[in-house]
Length: 225
Image (cartoon, rainbow, N blue to C red):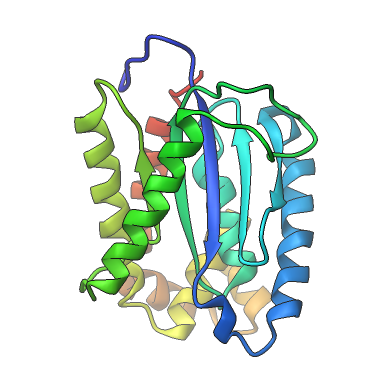
């Protein structure tokens, strides 16, 4: 077991579109976000305690009963909204109000406080012009500080890898992550050669990145399991 909780926690996810007011096609991005969240709510219905929805023009949130698919959901949103950048706060803790399963709105408690704190820390780091700006952060209270720091360090390392990717490498790597199949199929979808796919995966350190994702997903998967 990676984590210890006195009470069964839930996982609140808050997403926030970066520099949304500067987007030239802001309404189109918001429409796309709504469509993506609708797909997430349907695809992961069995693990969602309160459906994801847009709470403000630039922000959205949802509530998960466990951490099994938390990172997968975040990565799917990131990939589908690309090149629009989104920051994510993952908050683990109790929800002290009644939960409306149809929408993650009006609920309150440490789970949401922690997710909000994670978002605010990401924003502060951006203002400090840190060299590596992670766009995902985990926050929780209690006796799990060491585990939390470990996960956040992995998020930062993953982001540092992403910052080295060329446009082609990112396209190849995210296609591979999304479809989870072989290099020939990736090449066919993107209209490039298999050798180009192989080079992009190697130079982008895809298998290290994928392994980091799997390890974090496994750690988060123990929450609420």
